[in-house]
Image (cartoon, rainbow, N blue to C red; front, top):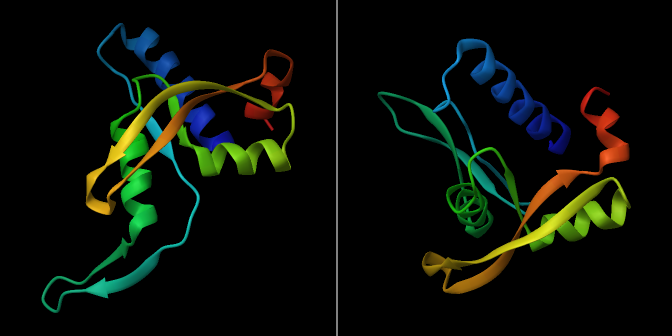
Length: 121
C-alpha cells in the first residue's frame, strides 16, 4: 500500500510537469485497522465499509498536505516494526476525530533517500 502511494505521488508530479499544470496534485492518507464491509441498497447496490478505523483513514487523508502521504501513529508503528529504516516519518499534526471522540497524532511519510528503489520494486 505504501509503495503504491509513493508511486502515485511520483506519477502525479511527472504528469503535472508534463502537462504544465501546477494545480494538479493529490494527498494520501493511510491508517491500519479493522473495518466492517457490506452491501447497501436494493435498487442501486453498493459495497461500503464502516467503523472507527474508516473514520481515522478518512481523517488522515483530509488532514494531510498535497503532494504527501499522511499516516496514523498505528500505521507508523507497524511500518517501523516491519520495515525498519525504509521510511522516514515527520510529525505532522494532532488530528481531531470528533465522530469517535478522540485525537491522534499523524505523520508525513517519506521513503529514505537510499531506499528510493522501493518505489520501483
